[in-house]
Length: 116
Image (cartoon, rainbow, N blue to C red):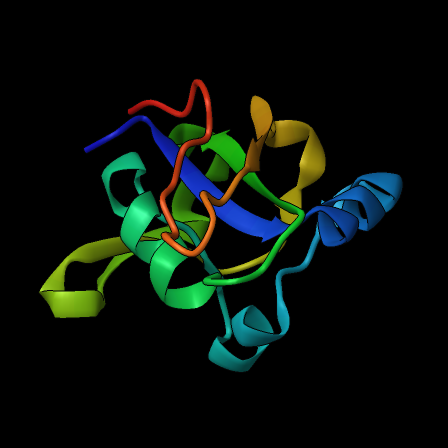
């Protein structure tokens, strides 16, 4: 498994979180009781399923080890293990934030430098 986990979110939400130093997650995260993350190889499918048609999104990269025991791997889509953060994310833990561009009507993930 990757040493990094990734979160997709609207740029405005991330900017607001950075102003306060803490990201508490999206409304879906709040509903589910944890912040949804993906591994690099899961990002394209996550983007297509949950963010199709949305614009002005960013991908946040965070080292797994920085999240400690609050990060759990749990079965989700198709039985695959996904990282879930039970708690908030200190924005200072992000090692990179990149744009998530969309290619017309074909929703293809192409963020630069997001690697496993």
